[in-house]
Length: 70
Picture 1: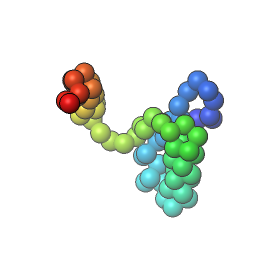
Picture 2 (picture 1 turned 180 degrees about the vertical axis):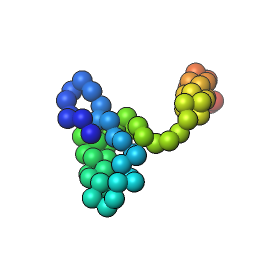
Picture 3 (picture 1 turned 120 degrees about the vertical axis):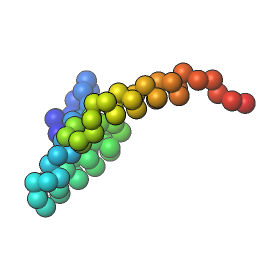
Picture 4 (picture 1 turned 135 degrees about the vertical axis):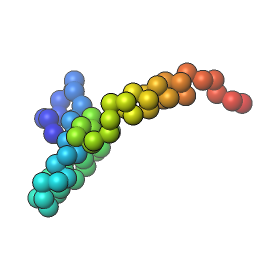
């Protein structure tokens, strides 16, 4: 995770889950700190294809561009 500052969000590398118990414990601490201090973070090393991420982003934009039903 990058050091916290007011201008950037933490970057969490999920691929470290494969590096053993100590790495997983450190990752858990990083996730806790990112959620507690920022509320948001970037997640990398997750293995989700760019095509799926792009599709999800398109759907999210479409959803949030819609009107709110009364």
